[in-house]
Amino acid sequence: MQSRPRAFAASLVLLCAAAVTCAGGREAASSPSSPSPAPTSASPPAPQSPANWTLVFSDEFDTAGALDPAKWDYETGYIRNREAQYYTSRPENVRAEGGMLVIEARKEPFQGYGYTSASINTLRKFEFLYGRVEVRAKLPTGNGTWPAIWMLGTNRKEVGWPACGEIDIMENVGFDPLVIVGSVHTKAYNHTIGTQKSARVTVANPWEDFHVYAMEWYADRIDIFVDGEKYFTFRNEGTGSAAWPFDKPQYLLINLAIGGSWGGQKGIDDGRFPHKYYVDYVRIYQQK
Image (cartoon, rainbow, N blue to C red):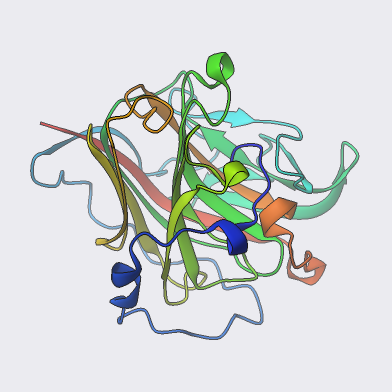
């Protein structure tokens, strides 16, 4: 998601085509014609660490209202990617409600922009080197939406993007609603030089159902999953930081963009607002 155009149709590299093909349980469905209702199901049981992993960070969003300031910070203002929204930390745009994180994008005039939304992150709150990230979420949809779960190197201000490294655990654009994209971006591998590393998988009704978007980060590789199915692997080729900057801490971001260089390629459907992006939990593990 970091400050770059998104010409995915031309630059997407399908590293794991076989994994995408085997996603037989995720049958195609038509794009929704109206926003899905608010979720009513309770969260899954309290987190239990997968084998060989220890839970080191979690938020179940069980306390209604403002997010825990010990865990989350906010991006505010206009940030990147020619997006149409102004990010705020207002409760109208981001809050815990009904045991979930709700990021709400609204069509409204604000600070000279026509839309508002939110982007939260763990910068200076929780940063880590290697581990497993799990986020259970239900996505908004419709032309113009661009929800994401992603990570950036904590040294971004010092070395810039893409040298800091970026891991996209989940990206989706509303005009292609069934497709989930996982990617990495580095100085050697990024779209600006035609070398971006990405893969995609089809998921049934991500605007109606919750799915678990996950990533495992090791010293030798990064694996990305949906509902336990691995569909993308990026390996450390041992050639240095230009190809593998992922030997330094990173932080997590969750945001809902409107429009922009990728999300806005087919316009923004103003008739579908407000959009709500629901996150049931965020859990980060490290190996025992």
